[in-house]
Structure formats: C-alpha cells, structure tokens
Length: 86
Image 1: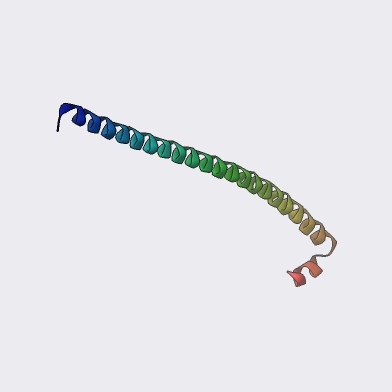
Image 2 (image 1 turned 90 degrees about the vertical axis):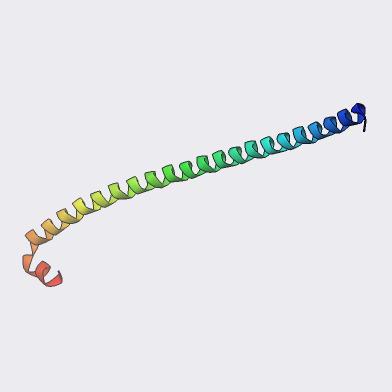
C-alpha cells in the first residue's frame, strides 16, 4: 500500500467521521428543540391550571361567605326549623 492509497483511505474515513458527527449534532439539536417545545407546552398548561385553581378558590371563598350569611338570615327567621334540618 503506498502513501497515496493511505491518504485516500484517511480522507474517506475523515469524511465518514465528519458525516457521523454532523448527524449526531443534528440529532442532539432536534432533541433539545423537541424537549424545549414540550417544556413550554407543559408550562403553558400548568399556568392555565393554576389560573383555574385560583378562580375556583375565589369562587369557593365567595360561596362560603354567602352560605354563612344565608345561615345567619335563616337563624334569625326561624331558629327551630334550622336546627331540625342540620
């Protein structure tokens, strides 16, 4: 084997190695992009669920206040009837 053949094989090996490095880098970049998009989607969903939970808590607090007021009014109107239904 002469030096020209060795250089030819080395060039081919270098080209294959470079191609493999490019494919691996591309795969890593695409994987990172996919994970980033998935993380953003999950954050958006979590933010929406947090807003829903906050709204539910606020509604519950209002209902508890309203319920306490209604119990107070019913107690003032007819305490005996209220005791039988509780």
